[in-house]
Image (cartoon, rainbow, N blue to C red; front, side):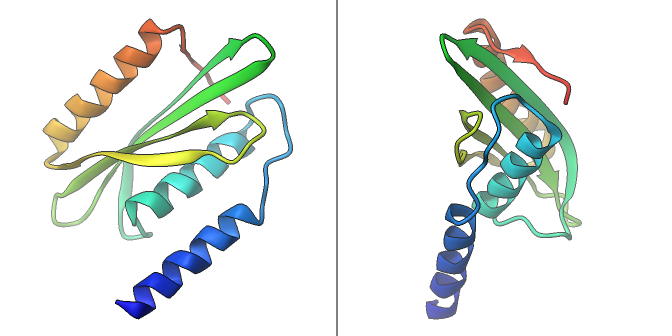
Length: 125
């Protein structure tokens, strides 16, 4: 347990130490969001990314984003999450659902619909 806490602290420090420095969505934005999300979901290289979507919205002078992804392991367990924030700042990430692929996909799609109803648009980077 103590080793896990040290590892989590190490990951948190590495994330804080590398602030983003850009204002427009780029591939670097999605890479940063994906890295943050994978860390929050405790997903390693053995998990396969089976879904991703990048949404953005401009509100006044701030550009906000949501990065959704679903990962699947060899045993068939799926986990989906959301990394979000303002472009140019460190994102936050949350786990949306964990379980079988159809239920995780339904939960993620529900969150995507809510964001799109608020004005977010799918963004290709």
